[in-house]
Amino acid sequence: MVRFSVLEPWQDPRGGEIERVRIDNGIIALEVLSLGGIIRSLWTPDRNGERKNIVLGCDSVEDYLAQQAHLGAIAGRYSNRIANGKTQYNGHQYQLSVNQASNCLHGGVEGFNRKLWQLGTLSDGVRLTLTSPDGDMGFPGNCTVQLDYRLVGNNLYIEMLASTDKACPISLTQHSYFNLDGNRSDTNEQHTLQVDATKYLTMNDVGVPTSIQPTAGSDVDMAKPTPMSVQTERPALAATKGFDHCYVLDNPGADLQRFGCLASPNSGRNMTVYTNQPGVQVYGANFLQGTIGKKQRVLSDHQAVCIEPQMLPDSPNQPDLPGDVWITPGKLYHHITRYQFDAE
Image (cartoon, rainbow, N blue to C red; front, side):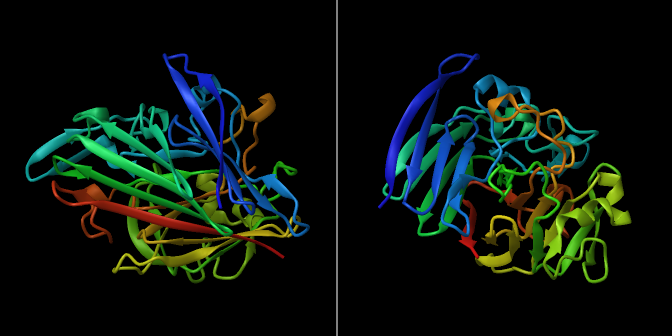
């Protein structure tokens, strides 16, 4: 049984209020905001059964709007990078919002992370909905999004549906920063990551994919549980100050497939991720320094780990990459990811 608590809303400096709700099934608990579909807190038990919050967040709307890290938010209309902020479909050219080097990153300057979503409840979670108008950040079509966060035992299910009335590339991801030590540590170095994917995307100096390569023997090979500290030691990761790489899953049927497991030897917590998406971006919080978190603490680089299931970056411009990113009228975008939390 899931218990719901409506928390005191926050004032949005842009006008109106931001709703806050906590859901708790007795094993894990979640605080969700109507701003950006944000997961502000996520409580899971350690090896002693003690629940602690394992994601980074902020204490006000102002702090969320001031940061560029997408803390806990939904990234969209297209997560990750679209090269030069340009794409085209059937001869129609689209200029998108450019907000990272020459790219459109995570939907542009005013992406889904900054939007006001409508928040309602389900029997086992919450449902958020958003309507993004035609031309929003340059993207074509009126886009309707449904986002469900559901608690089932020791699992958090995240399911996203989207439709549009014009052909549009859509890729949504949940951008939580996980620190499985329950914020008792300011580093992810002792976390271990194990990845099932056997391929990854090489990229140019602004993060746009250039090829698909095998992970075996590369600096992103995490087939065995490996400390995150390697991200500051392996030469190929120096250019991005650590992990900011997209793994490619062999999943043509879009089945719910295991990606890998993030674990903390300190707390005993581990998080196994399953997804139907063709790619998963692993980001080691390489540029988090200076972001204001809870209790006005200044966050540090490599303080957490993002595991972001998604369509592949720049897929709208690279049709040879796996996954069908162009959603046309009458077609439905469907993303489902399961986060399983255990302790040992």
